[in-house]
Length: 166
Ligand code: SF4
Ligand code: SF4
Image 1 (cartoon, rainbow, N blue to C red):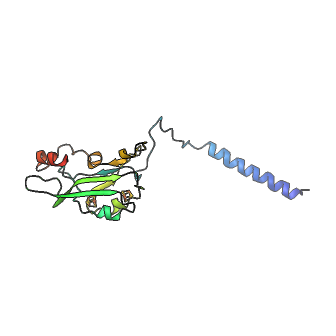
Image 2: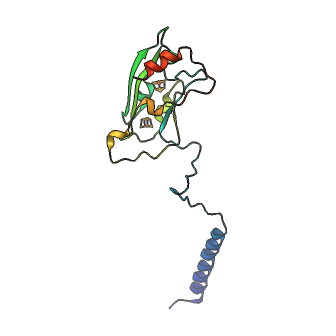
Image 3: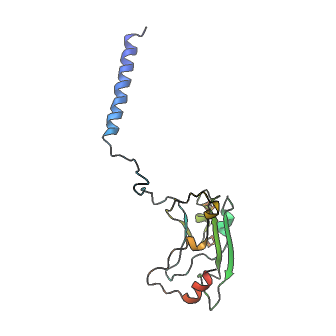
């Protein structure tokens, strides 16, 4: 049979628990109403990658392969090509003619972003990539490359666009 001390102990625990419950009831709700409303993502959220351009509109990626080497899932595929006087795609000697990321394998670890010496690859906030067709999860450079900034005049834009369309 419970003694008086145990009864008070149990009652005190109930009062303490209810106190926490009432306190939480007064706090603003943090429930996300996704998909009815867009989720509130933190700035550092690691979503689908973006390939960045510099202020002139040139691609920042110089096809150095460091991101592919750092990737623990081996899901980055790059084919490099040389810039020429007539066709300049990036600010370096080379550019990525092909840049694919296989999201069947990517674990969004961010190692590729950390490894990139030119800040060419970053994480965007896109995350709705689920698909029943795994072939759609291989994203190409054209899917990830950001638009040319307004007012930017890449040195050889006409040829660049043509060559970048491979
Ligand atoms: S986020 Fe990680 S797994 Fe995904 S491509 Fe980058 S390094 Fe590879
Ligand atoms: S994204 Fe960065 S690390 Fe990867 S190949 Fe391009 S420049 Fe190199």
